[in-house]
Image (cartoon, rainbow, N blue to C red; front, side):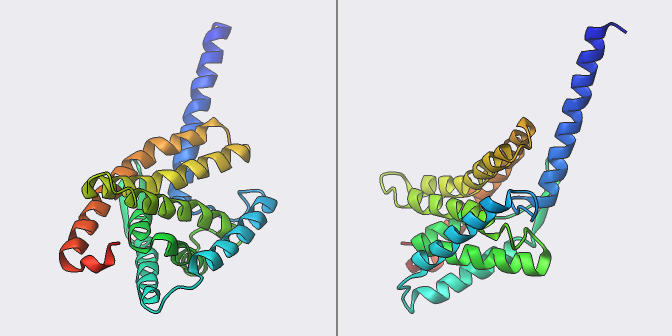
Length: 221
């Protein structure tokens, strides 16, 4: 075999193994980064920032806001149990966009609490990486909140964008974290799968917003 053909073949096999590895990675974590994957120092720093954000985001929450925060936290927790097949792997809903729409700046504590209990009960993610996971997914909720506040756009468009960015923002952050941790360019394949998941999530978010607008509009700021 010609040396150049052998080199091309090896590269092709390497690319296949890299793609398979990434798909296995997607199946295992779906945005829940497990302990031992990200550098411990990064996890400790992220944990400290997350605890600070829980305090800042939940500070001076009113009596009327607390039940809604609890309800949304429960919804985020249950969403992790609803899996569906997608692009050869299995994924579950995030609901970070709708959390940002309903709770606004109060969305971080429910995200943190849901991830904590998911880690303790179902081993989705880890306790050491709880801060990293919370920052990633909390950023998705905050993105949904910021989009929802953009009043110059149609409400349906805002709902679609909030749901889409609620998934894409955490995935972008996670891709950067894995890239910085030395996992190679293959982690970018995450985006190709999660774009589909983000589109599904945007449609679900739109449906949820339209339903809430009809039955309990006071929930929508």
